[in-house]
Image (cartoon, rainbow, N blue to C red; front, side, top):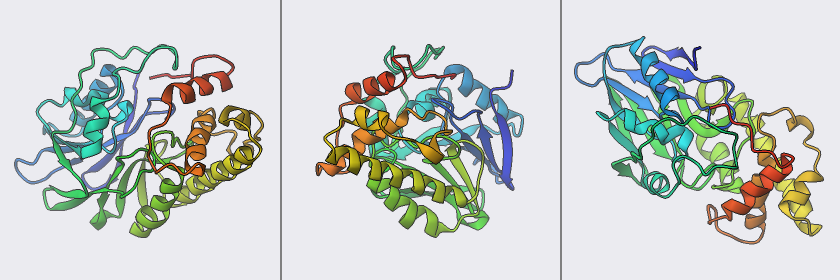
Length: 306
């Protein structure tokens, strides 16, 4: 059974899409250089050994050139667990992406998500890091790797922009058809990044971290959900409700059919911290927030098909 499929989004630029985009089922992508020696630039890896090997096989179906550069959009395991399988590549990421990988259990602790066959995993954090960004070249094609400037989905989100082609790999700044998840980032920061960093690029083709390739209209859908989280948090906080209580009392309305709706609980944990004056990306009680998400899910582990 195929785990994902390749979609060409521009000449020599490809997205690798893994349905259905729910927990730990992410998108990656790659660029194939026509020039000598440059090889392939990969945007992210996948969550399990099996899924990353399938991704590498998909690259081989397009080109025999090796992956020489691997860019991580952020530290989460669905985008980085498989880094080690590209052992010949220079792994590039924000300096906090490196820290995040080194300080995150691999694989995730049991009991939160349904059972997953992670396969063999080894930590392989970026060893070429930046604070603001770096320019990569795929042959003559310029690729701008840019830290978005503030915590959003995480503390270390980067985008890969290809201005000449009006293409951006957004990492998890965009979820197309899935519920955004700000637990380790910032709700207000995410809104700011979408409005002041991503939208002004004017890219017509966006490769989200999860879900189908899309256009800029998905930015508006993301903003609507994040503002809904802020409003829900303000009301729940003012009423003295816990994030879990506020989530249970909330009608998700137009967002009820997004994948992984239990993320509302984690998002409210983050939004409450911001209402209490915490800095963007400040540490959150992960065990409490994830436990509340399981409770919201009827006490059952969160569904993961990775």
